[in-house]
Image (cartoon, rainbow, N blue to C red; front, side):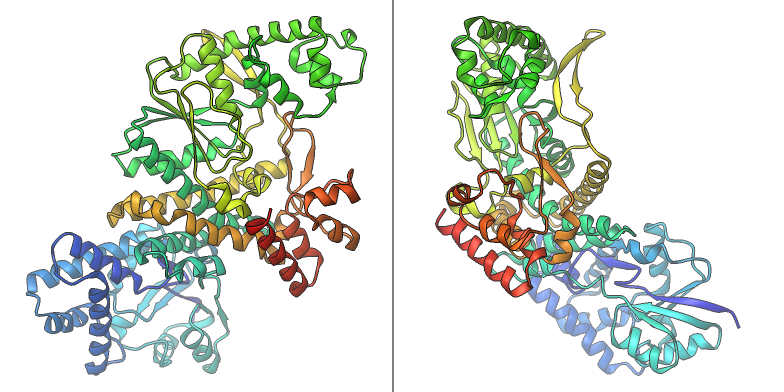
Length: 629
């Protein structure tokens, strides 16, 4: 007898883009109600559809029922005429097809010697259609209880299969029908648990303060994204899971808010500032495709503090020169490199802002370099779409709004600044922002007073990293100005960024398609976006699991303008370090001024200390940052 491996179908090979299968009935009801096909509210239709299935099973003389039998009962229960019943049934199958996602971890295991087994009311031909949609066509045979009338739950399905095949191993997600029953029958079996919702997915799905259609679609997209991609490597898999469960919803909700606000301002163009803006631009491009009302041109603008601060320096505006120093003394070699000065002209090994200010000859050289770099930057900005008459906005993560100020200053100097509308700047958050120049305005997604506990700048910047180095300037090639990128990414950064971007964009597609399919307005989602982000980010930052932190502990981030001063996100610490680093920053500097502190102290606590102690310490940090600092 031929040996085969068998796989459960739903939530093992394919899943729906929902946390619970019955959520599909709610959204089916939502669509039917919105289209005026039925008068039942979504909740009522969901209950009726589930009750019809329950009654159909009760009155059936077989172990399994069919979708036709369920709809016969639904027709009798609701009094709907046959034409409407047939239309609803057809739409349910359409939604099943639209909402199906392959589970990558198990799809890769299927081969020509695999059989698929399902306890389902859906017909076998429809299961084949679902597989074809996901390009799964290498398998031996499908066994569907809707046709055999026997189920795995009773064990009779396995007995039926045993007449034709010897099952070497069965894999499935149901503890009873996919594990206990086949084990009792002497079949080697494996319980698949990854399709169960994660703590992040459950926290959003069960957040009652958020309308069901919003939380169900977001939690469902998080889960479906997590299952749609699989990595063998444990670290890479953890990167993907956190990206799909935390950063993907965070950044998508931010971008949806930006697009809605930009539309209300009547902006014509949005420029996403690099490097953090690369993934934000890609997300927004996906969202914009399904919302034609967002009639805004989106552009990715390669730039950096270095490429913008220097051209913005002028005799009457020396602030950008001060920003370069960041209130510190900087290395002479680096200063000479960015200002194109011979190092022999400077005696001191380190320079401060005041050193330059007091040396008129050195200051003049800086102003000359600024003017030279400004000429080519202006060409680039004009080429990319900035003009005196365009209503434009810039998009960034944060945190002071200096890139926006530098752009506005350069445009103003060259006479192409829009004096009436200025530039609208959109930010996740701002801390000690620079003053608005001219007619500029800054709009913040997460208000600092309410969401200061989420202002982990380095963590957020690490999760918005681009797949290219920092932009250090511009050059002209064949009449076109192109950015010059610094090649300073290591191999781990490149791998992490590719994994992260793939996860986030997969979520974007599922999320945007769901909003479009069920006619969920961006305004409704934006009303609850900050709440969702607060739930997810608070859980990730302040109560991370050890396995999550260990995936990120070797990643580093450089917050300085030269991108050379790298610090780890998290690392295992000594008890002395734990004690000192958990003190408020002002006090900590008194004890250990020169010691570099990892950016994610809460993560460091989680991998260094026993769980209960780390939990209490991180809770205290959350309380302090939320209500005191």
